[in-house]
Image (spheres, rainbow, N blue to C red):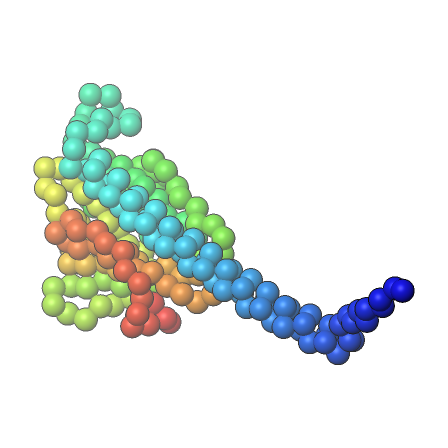
Length: 199
């Protein structure tokens, strides 16, 4: 005699509940992954900008031959941020003789860097001495040998040198990182925890 076992499956309600739970868990995982991915890309961008400033510093205080005058080793080097022109681009330039600590145009351009993935430079703050930071749209950060110090100027005005520049980069998700450049030559990257970068 055959023994008949009663096989039960999912009811329609149980199946719908299981699918709903799976959908919610998957949605949360995908959303968190996208946020994590955006955060990693923004941090990488901040370090790339910091490395570009470090590259200008390295060129400026070591012996690098001028790109237009073979045998000349007396150029300065810098980074230009111009938010009025573009919030997704910045430039590495050679500050040729006579050195004025600012970018004078395409003749001094060495390399232009494009920011991708919807990230942008949201704000630049400069500080003079022990004063409060002020917003600037055009900032030049330059280095001229043999001095390891940083020359930070705003809007092409070389009569005032600032003690600190803070370049804010922001992602489409709203998170921000700050590249801090001190007049002493120190360059660092921090997370914006005080909403300094918000407009």
